Image 1 (tube, one colour):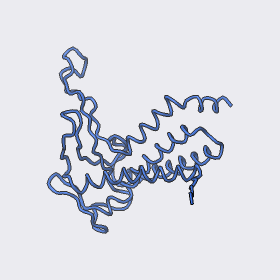
Image 2 (cartoon, helix red, strand yellow):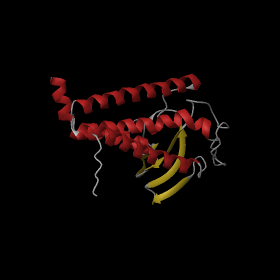
Image 3 (tube, one colour):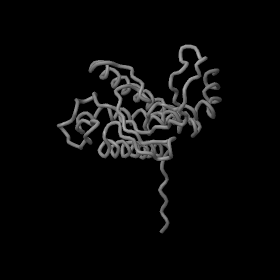
Image 4 (cartoon, helix red, strand yellow):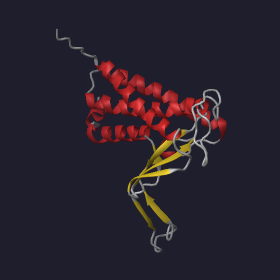
Length: 211
């Protein structure tokens, strides 16, 4: 007997988000529990490294908040943003928006969720990562409190390493690296989602803006 299970668009979105979120968290946990802070593993010559760093700011290691209250405020803003994006995706599905638009928004949502999980739980669940010791999973004996965890980053692509020519104003003689930020899988989801929407789905948003 041939039985086919047909999932509704909402369930497809939910299951896709869960799968991508699991991938993001598996990568982060493997890095955090197997590498010391600052450790780098070459993957592709001098162009691609798995480099373990942590940050308490936004995507790509940007620092937007100082102190415990700033960190908590940033975490709460992320949670509110996730709620807004989730509601917006719900309205897109109800309106029958193109699958591409929904997919792009879902990527942004799962990326935001991935980094929120770090902030919410990693400080409680893991011991501190240092330049000499590897963190271990130890609930209740973590390095920080709820909403004060660090985001785990590991993807580093220093494709070009050079020095600014002396004739360049201000920057002349300084080192230059492209691409210098270290980021994670969740950051990649967000970036891919934004770029995809801008390049391939802008007509949908322009049409609704005019309406």
